[in-house]
Length: 467
Image (cartoon, rainbow, N blue to C red):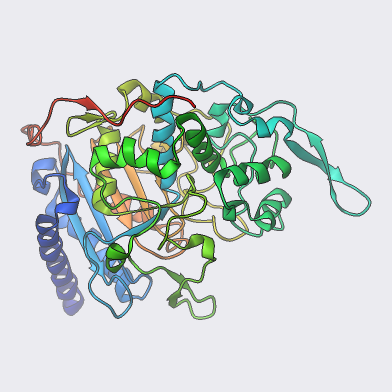
């Protein structure tokens, strides 16, 4: 017992020391550092988060990972544990991770930039911007040969429905026999398309999962949004995001692929051996190759990033659209994006990480009291699920194991990054939430003051016109 306690405290101390050293020495984190106590945290309790992450490394559940916690505009805790790859060098704080579906909120910001330019409205029909969807159909039964009978949908989905996964589209990430539309998407290789235009063309000929506005269903919607961004801006999705989001925010390692000179920082991707449960290198199709620019940059899951880069994005959302004097969105646009748009009774069935890659039930640990905004989940009644976050907390995750939440009520955000397909089950983001909020003792007694180096606010990017 004494040895276990000593080992736990030693691990926590080492994680804190090396994590803080990495934090101070790594320019990629960018946000200024603050002491946990100044931000109302108990530093000793925060070490439990490091111990939890290290325990997963020790048990062979993950090769390594990075966590980052910020409050009141300053990073108060950041740690790298384990290795970048099994048996390799230690995980660096600026490791590059496949953030997969955490791309969706970034695509949502891209859409809102164009929204502010008056190029689309929430209740417009999607067909106004994607006329290829004029003849979308849904299966109304099967014929004598067992083939689906397709009939036209009652109306086109709206842009609001497209951005809230209520438009009725399927996804096709998995070959799911329980969902003929998803199976059709999978077999047609929707996500493996040679361009976003080809992706849209394929979707236009495949059955819808449901009529528009009937239920929440995780879907290819954000990838369709990527196509709309390209069409309205006249730029490719990677170029638009670089010019209007990444460069203005200083997100130097966020892109749709990892160039050769940065591959040494890429965290290796693992899966769990179904027989032994041990980590094995993940095997994925060529369309997942992130060593080169993709043929179809997927707005629903194509980005790579670092904890430091995503911290800048999260702080921008927490600041209501502004970061270090650069305004990406107006406060009103961020408010629109981060409020619940789901009708009563709609159920969010995944968090973007769990239950996505394999057919079957899609559990979501905070489904009760959870709504959905524009391309990210919103906690509308955290107490209903026992979640410790504040009302209005937005969050999402990625199928390669990453997750984040942004809590405006407590003025904080958290970023977690591992690289294991499907994460480690539905509990990791919930466990990290518990450990973080258990460490909050009090609000700061004295305001920490604005971060240094503030510049006059200016609008990011260049004017974009429809072409």
